[in-house]
Amino acid sequence: MDSVSAREVAALDRFVKVAEVGDVAEGRGRLVQAEGRVLALFRVKDQYFAVGSLCLHRGGPLAEGELQGHVVTCPWHGWQYDVRTGSFTVIPTLKVKTYNVKLEGGSILVEV
Image 1 (cartoon, rainbow, N blue to C red):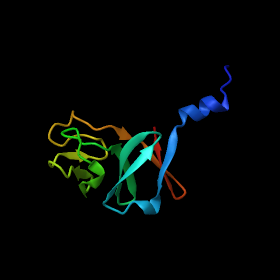
Image 2: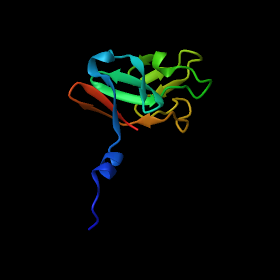
Image 3: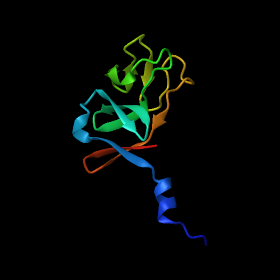
Image 4: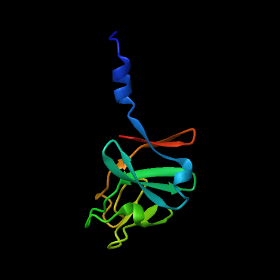
């Protein structure tokens, strides 16, 4: 059996702290960074979702959009995305990138 180094294990588990639980209000979004990536982090009740920060239409700031349930509306031209899947609600095959999120203690971590 091959030996796996601690460095190789760490490379597989690439969760990065992006915020604290109290940093994101329920039903709101926030712009965060994770290792050079700019993401939109959303809180729906006690769940957190991370997606690419820019709308596919004209690059609008999704973190500034209105969140209703699991759907964020781009503040520039009204495109809507499901934050769970990244899918554009009109054409679900169009998607913004999604990122796995986990909580550790009071920290919010995103997989990059």
